[in-house]
Length: 190
Image (cartoon, rainbow, N blue to C red):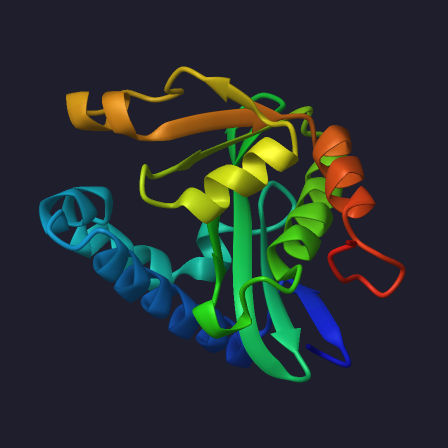
């Protein structure tokens, strides 16, 4: 699909603006995906906290303890992902999103592979993440990457405890399994 897919770590101001646009599209995508469950989306994205995160992405995901990646296919922003520290040698992958028109071309795998590699180089031994019950593509990807289902790793509502899926894996394992699913050109291998 792309002649070039660039993964940019520590985006500059213009690139951060592109990430913000992607994350706004992500929230809209979630609203459509969870139609009829808007209270849930609102509870997961407190408006003030969400706007603070978007306004301060560089601080929320600042190196060396965190990272923010922007994926651009042929110069067009197509996806993003981040991680932040949780405790000790554990980090949390956040905001994995590939714009719907670019899904199915290995962008998420490439971003996860790079993010896991960075997390490992920065001293993390565990990557945790969460995903919603209607994000079936993400769930399938995490199963293919052999991530382990775990109990919630933070205090959450009864609905989240019953419906949100929590996973973890090692950075090396995640990077290796993601990389094994890509061909020499970085595309999903058949």
